[in-house]
Amino acid sequence: MKPYNELDLQNSLAEYAETGKLRDAAKNHGIPHNTLYYRSQGTNPAPYTQINNQKLSPALEERLAEWILFQGAIGNPPSHEQIRKLGKRILTTSGEPAHLGKH
Image (tube, rainbow, N blue to C red):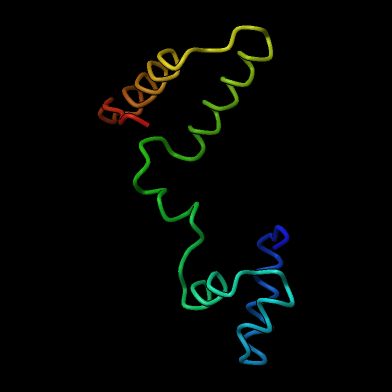
């Protein structure tokens, strides 16, 4: 199955709402029919379901990723331990407990 994006999914949801034919709408837009079914029932996309369980906000996570990429670009890629230490420092500064999980 070809890759699809959110616009493809929204178009297939609209077609499904109009026709009531889930499998046809999914096939016409290259969406797995299970995905279309669950999204039509109000299930959130996978990336959004775990946001509340993450220690860093998406914005802070993005900044950390930018720093990691910048360090790599200048020839000084950070170690896993350096990234964990910076993550803990960010949490402490934010007033959150600095405990981080394994992953």
